Image (cartoon, rainbow, N blue to C red; front, top):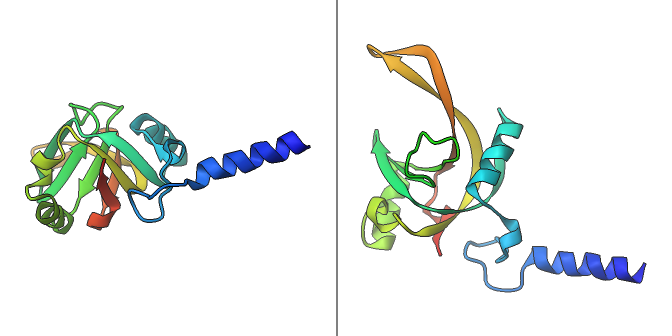
Length: 152
């Protein structure tokens, strides 16, 4: 029984974290961070719901569409192993101010922590401006506040 209680106490210490957090309220421990593949599997299992967490990824590619900025964990955003961080135009502007340059360039090749919720997102293929019956899924974390992102 004594060994069990010590094990529980040790586990709680690890989970709660001991050092300053990169994001407020997030323990500074690798145990609480979700990597892209973990996030994608959990989001697929939870679909159509999202899974909340703190996500750790290296930004391998970036892009824009309709004023949104996308940070991708894989070089090809269509790769099923890719976790995509979607930034609203307002968040992209806030990050540009904070980082001194656009997140498209400032974060490419960097490791980031993102607090939010990962959700499986259906992406339809279009032909002549109309959606076809063909589609695939991406996993997105939609960022609506620049404080959700920290650079490691």
